[in-house]
Image 1 (cartoon, rainbow, N blue to C red):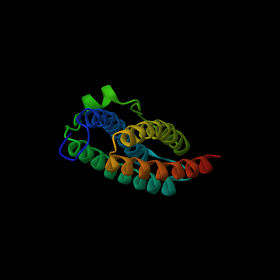
Image 2 (image 1 turned 60 degrees about the vertical axis):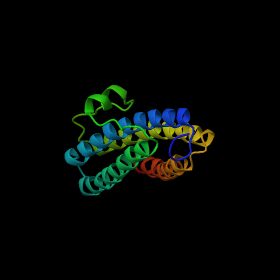
Image 3 (image 1 turned 135 degrees about the vertical axis):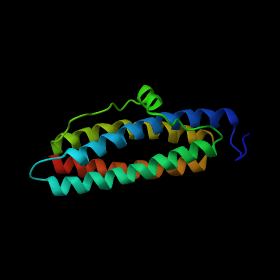
Image 4 (image 1 turned 45 degrees about the vertical axis):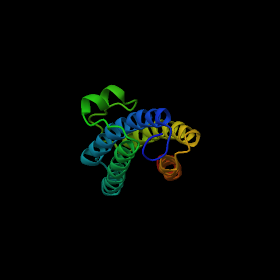
Length: 154
């Protein structure tokens, strides 16, 4: 058992999966920053603010995930070299069309929600309520955002 009472092998696996999630969040964060900086067109003001709201939320999640990895007794990834080699979400450059940005956001949410469901399952098996609660909160919030972003581009 580790210092918080979770089987060490299961905690190590959870930390590894959280590091993969962290890498995806970091790449996603920078993509959304780019959408915020570069958006143009009729919905500029609305989307500029919406992208800012999203990247501020992602920044909080990045910190929470890294701190959870530390709580489990492991070290969070912290270089873009690591992030880019691990992340399923890829860098996106030069997007100025708001709807294209939103489609990319939806693609990223699909990846993140899938990964978070996997971590949620592993956390349940490990009786890791801290990770479980974090993933549940993220999934619930992001499912609603998927609905809203889909409604916007429909």
